[in-house]
Image 1: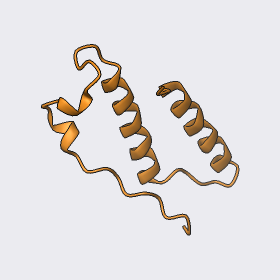
Image 2: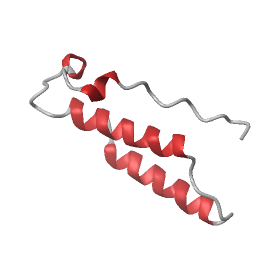
Image 3: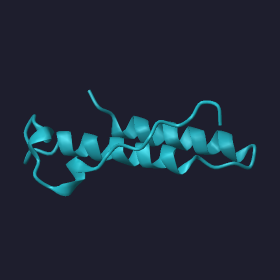
Length: 72
């Protein structure tokens, strides 16, 4: 089961932890969180049923953001 609230909570914990060291999440991390939330909302949208892969809009053709480099 997907959990948009879990994504938001995890992102908030990341923001809080990084605030302590005067840093911010990378653009890639924020993009990934947004994409995951969109996938969740699309997959639970009754207009698309259980098959979000059959959507015809342009958001499904966007390439995923690259994974954050763990060495950064």
